[in-house]
Amino acid sequence: MEQPEADVTMGVQTEAGGTRGLQAQANRTMTLQAMSTARLQQRLRRTDEDIMVIERQFHQMDKSLLKLHRRWERKKEEVDALRRSVAVKKSTLDRIQEETSRCLDALTTAAIEEGGKRPRTLVEYLGEDESRCGYCEHEKGSFSHGMWSHSMTVQDYQDLIDRGWRRSGKYVYKPNLDKTCCSQYAIRCHASDFQPSKSHKKILKRMSKFLSKGESATSVRGRRPAANAGCGESGAAPDKVEGLVFTDAQTEEDPPVSEASRADSVSVPDGRRPTSTPKPGIGADPGRPPRRKAKELAKERRLQKQPTPRGVSAPTAPSDPLEDLISDGAPTDGHHHRLEVRLVRSSPPSEEFEASFDVSYQVYKLYQMAVHKDPPEKPSEGQFRRFLCDSPLEAERPPVGGPDVGYGSFHQQYWLDGRVIVAVGVIDVLPACVTSVYSYYRPEFAWLSLGSYTALREIAFTRRLRRRSPGLRYYYLGFYIRSCPKMRYKAQYLPSDLLCPETFVWTPIERCVPRLEKSPYSRLNQDPDAGDARALSDVDRAVVLYRRTAMPYSVYRRRRAASLSDETEVQRYGGLVGQVCAERMLLYRTYRSCPVLSQTKMLLLWSVWKDMHFSFCP
Image (cartoon, rainbow, N blue to C red; front, side):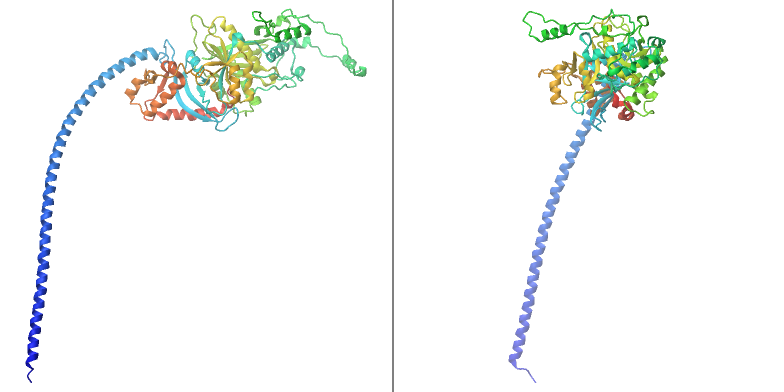
């Protein structure tokens, strides 16, 4: 059956419309592809342009690198030329250094080489140390700078103690006063102007009575003990004196009491004191001044208190010279005992010192165990040698103007009846002073206040040395600690001075005490414009010892290429010892790969050794 014409026409139109739609879609697709292709071509053109720019930049960089390479070649040639010039100058400098070293070695290392003509000081600076305080027992309250002295001249040590240094054996230390808990001020006494106080006279008279009359501790048990010098000296009076061989004169002068006389003395009625016939004596001592009445003494004291008119000198009470109060006791004068003071050189040890070493050591051991409560194994013989026998001071005997005993380290031994050492004073004789290092005594003689007695005898010894050496005027007592009550006794030796820790100027102690009452640390010099006259001004002039050659620090720094820490250490050392000592003493510098190793070992050894005895150092 045939379809209608209208339907056929509609089908044809439908096919034509589908064809046109497909053609339009194809046209759109082609258009999009053409646009995408155009964009890609545009990107390609831009990429080509960027590549061309990069190529131009690389070309410019190649040119720059070529210029830099040429410049580097020129600089390299200049550096090579500088190196050759430096090598030439270094060889010239080495020759100059060798010549300088030979000159300095000839002038400054005479004491290092055996048979040298002039001694020199050689020290090794150990830095600052923190330890337990031996005065207030604070665990970490003591700060001090230390040096190990292999050798030292007496003039260098004199200048060092005038800057607050002290020695303990061969270890030389300087307390850091503004950091330590107990500020330690160097103190000295004007020996020529010293006048013994009332307590000092009592001590001297007590010893005189013991030597002349044999007075023992039992006869003075009820008396109040006087202040003692020395470290921790006790004023105990034992009931009897043990370990002492008395002379026969004592038994002859004091015969035993008979039974009849003892019975008569007991049977006295009404509790009255028995009367006895006085023993025949030899009369008043013609060597002593006559006694004065109490009224005369009171009148004289009143006159002294009254104001004195201008131009009229006030009457002064006659004072007994120190030498007149000292009595050694001679057998010809009828004395019971005789006290002999022997001065023996301890470094280098003399024959007398070696002969009496064992006896002196036993006295030291008894003193440490009784006074400082040390166990028997602590005060060993080796510790005694290191602490009180070894000394870095060179024994010097000046040809003109010096003391007859010479300079150096000595022990003053106090022999009783030529048989027993009752006390020993360790001292150093220097160009301007006698300085006390330590003192010890037999504990059974503590009632004689031997610490103060030896100090008084050392002042008298200083006065005797000044007759031959006028420059030797002072007696150094070590350190004065106002905050420590047991160390205030040193202020009794008047007139005396304290050392200012900032200007290193000696100041009368009367001006210092009010300041120290307010603060343990104080600038004692009252002049605000005063400064350290010997402060370090040029560290390059400090002399060091390097490979057994003495040289200025400037030469050592160029030869050794010293680090910043080394220069800082030398600066600190020079500031502590001052410019004069820095130019005169030799500071040891090591050439090992680890320069701190030897110092660290030495510091550890010293800290162990110091714990053994530093608590009783003066």
